[in-house]
Length: 81
Image (cartoon, rainbow, N blue to C red):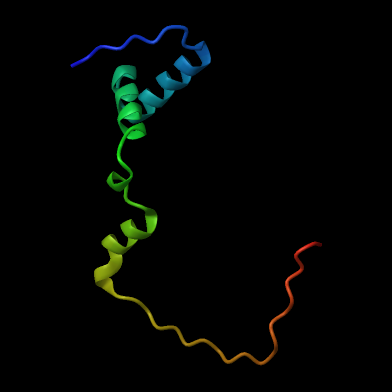
């Protein structure tokens, strides 16, 4: 494994890293490794929200909703009000 030193790290950044690491229950070093790993992961490694929901709930099927018939014409959008 390689070792990396980071010089001139802003104190505010270091403090936010410390708080973030504590929030996740790990050391600052482990938190930095997790951040760097996520930053350089290939796009296909990450699952989007829609795919995650489909994977989790897709087997349950969908719901057919009865939509009421439209009795009036749609209103014009007020784009510049």
